Amino acid sequence: MTRREALAENLASVHRRIDDAARSVGRAPGDVRLTVVTKTFPASDVALLAELGVTDVAENRDQEARQKAELLGDLPLRWHMIGQLQRNKANSVARWARVVESVDRLALVSALSNAALAADRELEVLVQVCLDPEPGRGGAMPAEVLPLCDLVEAAAGLTLAGLMAVAPHPGDPAEAFARLAALRETVLTQHPNATTLSAGMSGDLEEAVTHGATQVRIGGAILGTRPVVA
Ligand SMILES: *Cc1c(COP(=O)(O)O)cnc(C)c1O
Image (tube, rainbow, N blue to C red; front, side, top):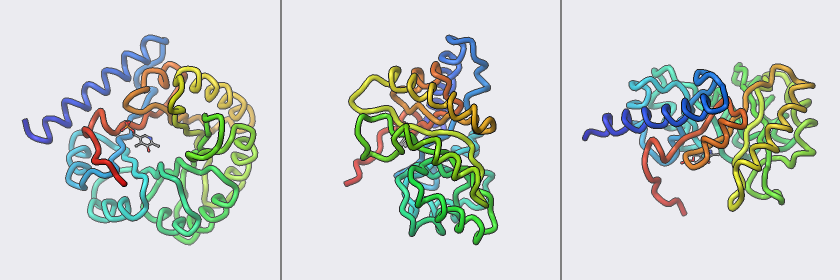
């Protein structure tokens, strides 16, 4: 089997999982978008994914993403930043990313806003929510989420698109995604256009979709096992 065939097969099976999960709760499968997490995989894989119809890809490291996005600049791809973000990377990220999913503190908002203005681009922003009992792996604690959304909405160059989260590990993804869904309802009362809910990875996409995810972020189930990064 060629790499292209393997990717096509894996994409089809992930789409089936998404569709089955959506139907199980009476949602239209088309309501859930797939973002493929291409971190650690070569630009050649990203090019194959684009040929196979993938429109959205996500990366977690600025330098790696920038290099791939430059190589593949002719392809109609939307690049998402999903990794922990440093303020001093904002200018670089604003040049390759269309969507920044990992905004989790106030200081990042002004840095990204300035960077978007300098790059003459409008960035879509998702506020990342921490579903762990303690902060640490990225994400704002739930009580901080609404003020952060307000700030993003008010910032020039940024559009508040919604929320993103990673299930706690260890932990029960269904319970965590139920908390996320409730928080999203609160945010929507203040920010009715912030409809994106980015949740669900290879191991828990069903729980995410049944709790309202509009976008899943899938790496391993499509690209295979990632090399361990130290
Ligand atoms: C790596 C990563 C994913 C993809 O995880 P898989 O288990 O490979 O599907 C999704 N979201 C974030 C934030 C990630 O860092």
